[in-house]
Length: 245
Image (cartoon, rainbow, N blue to C red; front, side, top):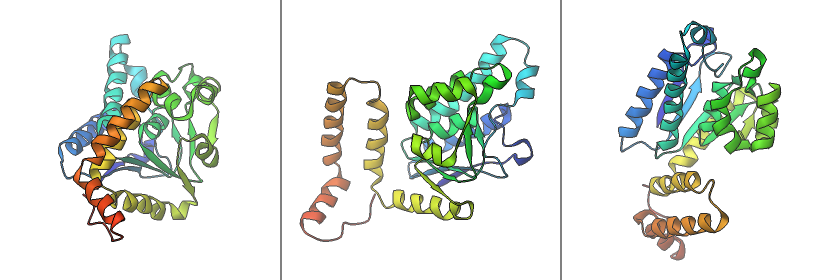
């Protein structure tokens, strides 16, 4: 398991240029690790992530420099999407703007009831366009537009209902809940999870017929892998499958 920690609590773990560079390097390292099974993203302090560093953004000289910053952030998000292993966000506090984007980009997210989620750049005249990309895909266009255009926040239980996070617990139980999810993932066949993550991403945006065609091919390919062959044989023989790979 790889754990990536946002560790700038005094500044609410903003995604500064330096933080983005560290995240990009860490994701690149995970991508090169053929033994990787799960990635966990968590944060120190009261906030999960307050998004981009507005002071840094205000100091950039022109539109080209602004675009470069957002493209570097997008590369981090794309890197998470392109990892072949599940990525779990463990959200203990507020996740706003690009911080909410980070949560939405992860495959799974668990949250403390102390957490809140928003894309409130509109409060300072800045529509959160890049966070909108994973957010609309995760919670749907109507609710995403509401959050993006009004700047309102979702409480943890609302985020659960919207599908932004998959489980919510009391703050003191968050570490145990995160470990429960990690343990469940580690018990599953890594190849099946890799195929599944690919399929979930690829079928988005396809028509129903094309999505079913792609899914059928993915299941057929999965069924021919050793993990599925062994697991199915163990099931029909009424015995425990061997250790997941």
